[in-house]
Length: 110
Image (cartoon, rainbow, N blue to C red):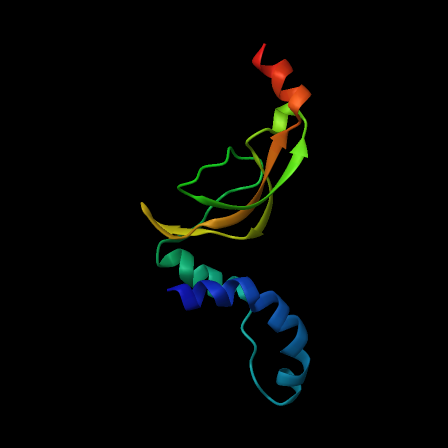
């Protein structure tokens, strides 16, 4: 399954670069939606990340950025999608997490 997930992540780039030459050579290029629909029908679901509270069981924090207090501890950017199948985590989402500046954090705690 990890290889399939990598294909989903990279497929839009590959299709954009290779679709025309492949189609002109007579190949049929299947869109990402078809492949993602097959994964969905098998029970694979993408993990929602941006705007959600950081959850170390679902997200891998690879970066942080100073934000206002309202975004402290929330995912502000997703570098790669995470996937799960039912309760089983297939791959965590790689994300950037907001962290409040010292002053904003102190104001929120009071």
